[in-house]
Length: 281
Image 1 (cartoon, rainbow, N blue to C red):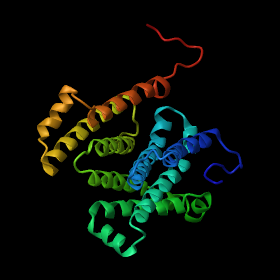
Image 2: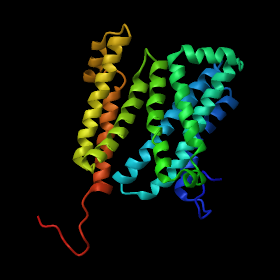
Image 3: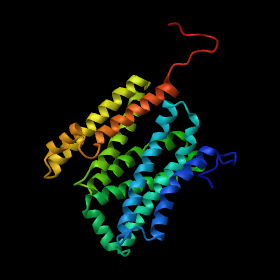
Image 4: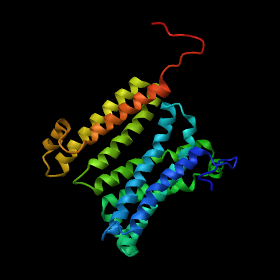
């Protein structure tokens, strides 16, 4: 099982944990289907469930590199391939359920993908994930060379953007969840940009990044409702100020960013005192 093993043939605990985590949503959906808990719209519920989890796990894949640096836990890298393959598996499952829902009518499905922008975007995301999954093995790395392989697999950023855009276009009247996923993706990409521009991403940089991305997420959500729906954008803006009802996406992004910054400072980025020395008052 190449998704679980490494070259030594052993099964690292991190990769086993990753396999358990990514299997849980599939097992939960299977259990709900077996117990008839999904109601009369089983296909619709399954399509929704697999699509969301494809994005969640894709974001988890992109979060591995920032997490291992922020928390100084290098072995997290072992989980990345399992997460990436699982994101592809859920996306493929999502697409298969869509095809099955329309009776495998190839002509209709092709027309639908061409005519519906959100389906076109989703198909592009799946195509990228397919290429990445097919080249995820050590053999592919050896064949392509590390430089070309890394260039190819940088397409995962495009896949993430397309997947979130697919979700957003599919849910134009209630974009809270897509905006939340878009905010998390922006934070992960922003972290990488910080590393490239400044060469580091310490607590203050992470704090600034979190505030900036939270503000951009808020602006994006309010602007979406103003431009794409009949909903008064002032209602959305007031939702951020009054906390009346659900917590808005921007607040979730800010809270998560602050939590990561604090945890990283506490366990990963905080300067260490050399053994045998003390800090003066």
